[in-house]
Amino acid sequence: MIKVFNLEKHFGSVTAVNKISFSIQKGEIFGLLGPNGAGKSTIIKILSTLLKSDSGNVFINGKEINTNSDECKKIIGVVPQEIALYEDFSAYDNLMFWGQLNGVSKISLKQKIPELLHLIGLEDRKSDLLKTYSGGMKRRINIAAALLHNPKILFMDEPTTGVDPQSRNKIFDIIETLNAKGMTVVYTTHYMEEVERLCNNIAIIDKGEIIAQGTFDELQTQCDLNEYILLKTPNATDLAITMLQKTIQLPIIYEKSIISVQCKPHIHLQSLLNNCKRLKIEITDIQIQKTNLETIFLHLTGKQLRDY
Image 1 (cartoon, helix red, strand yellow):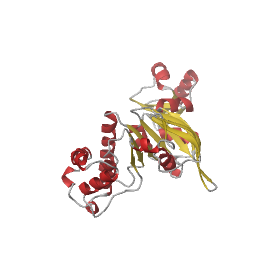
Image 2 (spheres, rainbow, N blue to C red; image 1 turned 90 degrees about the vertical axis):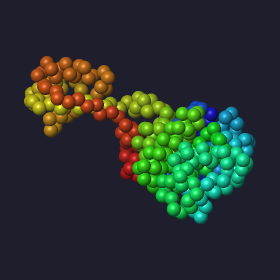
Image 3 (cartoon, one colour; image 1 turned 180 degrees about the vertical axis):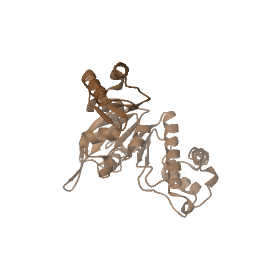
Image 4 (spheres, rainbow, N blue to C red; image 1 turned 30 degrees about the vertical axis):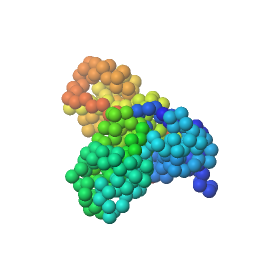
């Protein structure tokens, strides 16, 4: 659906995008994850034909965007980071205005707008002025405005910025509903939990470069990160823990009645439990502490995403 080859963009002496390449399959939600200033918005602007790259190529549905921009624009919708709406218009009038600006007929809009208002859960507020809306509600109208011409691809640039948890979850529901109907979504964010919930494939971006990409499982394999088994025990002695360490030959930390074992749970759990039983270490609770995107990002960059 989308293929990107050696994309590069400079702003003066600043390299915003540094020779990146990736592909996005039809019907997937593709996440661009990285801190503010990593180059995510620049990539979205180039892919959505709003900004020209300095070098490289982008193909959307088999067509190169610089030479076929008009055709590409017909099948893409863009939800910008900034809310592009008129405060003194109602929700309905905003959608009617932006739809006509994109060349959609009034007849089509009169059918499409009620469907979209229902999708975003704001049909009962359609006649209210935008200035009476919360930030999250405006974000949802912003999404609806990008869908008026029935795009096949939706670019979403930090669509949950500044919204309340209820609106955030509603936006997730909207994205999942659209994707279930076959829409391809390209989603930028610096919130790891959003990518973990929504995205099939992920590109981790830092300083204009893709430092890793793939599914979550593929990223985990690339980083070769272990997970942890946490065993709660009321009676483990120092001697028993020492014997357990020698037997299983895995890193162990024992603190506050919790045995933490760094390992691959699907390989080591049964052996670990068998050895605890043999050493008469009573286990009252078992937890698996899985690798998440935060630990992957920390491993790749040496920083936590929230440190930026």
